[in-house]
Length: 228
DNA sequence: TGCCAGGCCGGGT
DNA sequence: ACCCGGCATGGC
Image 1 (cartoon, rainbow, N blue to C red):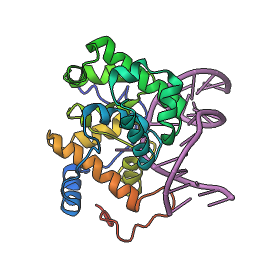
Image 2 (cartoon, helix red, strand yellow):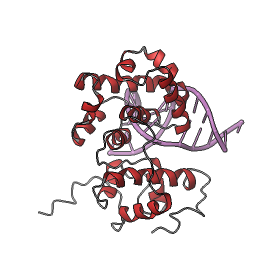
Image 3 (cartoon, rainbow, N blue to C red):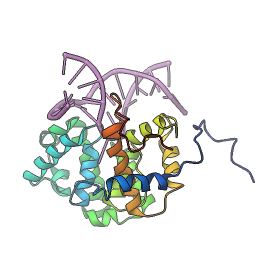
Image 4 (cartoon, rainbow, N blue to C red):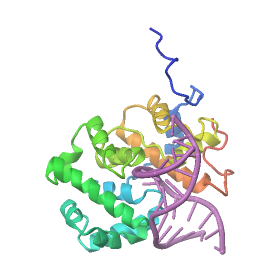
């Protein structure tokens, strides 16, 4: 059956020649191992993923440092903290009331499903974990995939604003292509290798920060100049 | 000084 | 199914 085209929702057309693995190799040659995600434990990575929503990482670092100083980087401590207390600690990361509630929502589900055992929580299968995370208020697709990939070591590609912008500026996708379309675009041409997934997303953030900001594009020395 | 940062939700059309 | 306002700090 050629049951493909009729029900497909208006989806952006993309050059089917896109080779994400080639992109990976080019960027790896330039950057080497990415060292991502910044964060020492799976819990710290997950917390950072929430705190960095629409926020510069330098601000997140301050917030995480404060959590550590107050011995609050802990499932039960966050879970039982007063919302205002938690908010005051993560203040530098912005949206602190919102993110305080979101962190507590995440800890709540870890408590409910695994009695606060982070390792057990992250040892679920990808699809199970991903849907559990997506059901948490305050965790959307990018945050869920970031946690799955970097905190739980699952093979799922993280799509963010930089990924979209870089692809669209190079004519490889529409800027407003929906999340799943872009994710499939990458996963279709990547080997199922966790390091490749982790590093490629990291490289796209590096390129985005250095050469592909919203304004002030300095594309001259961009490693992707002329791509493809 | 204003714009931007590794989003997401809820309400409106 | 989109579109939009709100959420907030710190850096350039």
